[in-house]
Image (cartoon, rainbow, N blue to C red; front, side, top):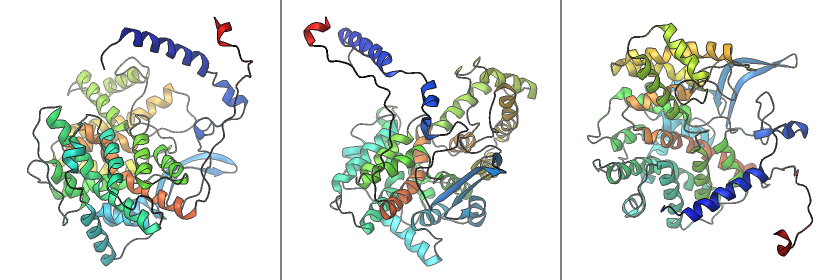
Length: 452
């Protein structure tokens, strides 16, 4: 935007008015018993609904006292550990888990084959959509690009106002199928027009899995190894759903409860996920790791690494925010089960790429950081590495550019959003409308002429 000093001055004054009139003491939340961020003081989420889709557990109540426990995550009653163990070495882990989350049960072989075929048939964008929508306004903010594309797809759907459940399911499945295309094509458009890179648009192939197609569409030669596909498949599986209480899934339930359409609902969820407090954690981890490697080099002692992590935590290094990124979670204390599951795949991929030394750095930080944080911070629960601590490293080893890190999260999480949308449509009958306590003071109106 062109600079306009009068506008800048006005906005500076307006911002001052907002700070003056919109800010109030955080003490008031405690005074009035308001659960800030819909969370209790100990971090527990305030119950706002019921779900049969998934469950997360990071603590248990023993004799009335909340006690941290080993982290657990279930999809439709199945432990994430059992799911990953049962699907390891098999194709279509993403598709099988998507069937489970959206339809509520594990598919038989013929049901899975039919589901995969359906997603393959739905992996088609309207004629000229890539040229007229995705390439029309390329941007480094691929989440915005994907959101625009999702909203535009609504214009091509003649069933937009149909509330029948089968139509709602079809719309969700369509978006699950095309989300990888929206992300990868959006990146290629940005890379060509803004980054002066090469342009190639590979169509997804119906006989390939979602993970295979992502790598094939992203790479010039469309090649990939079985291990790369398996690791990406598991990464998508682990990011697919997380208990229903996260910001983007709650957004999905809120928008669905208003009666809005599928495309608007998913666009809102994408807007929520793109927030750096929600979906961008792995990018911050990668930036932090680059900073650590820059300052410590390839040869360092464990003590030197611990000292530098302490500087980061005390706001003396990296971005000076006082955070060791990738550590800690709102629910998990002892461990994030997703990180626990994922770590073995990360190690295997790093070994195949000749990047064992970098993996060792991650592993050492995972061990040291919780001790340093516990020593320097007053915390009510334990701290451990979360899934985002490793996911950025994995994406980078797979040649996935950093601009696609959050979109990769969205490609997976739209399955969970879809499951929650369908559950809300089936069981919900009220618009979600929370209450805010007003602390406003009433005033007498002053006429314009008397305001000076």
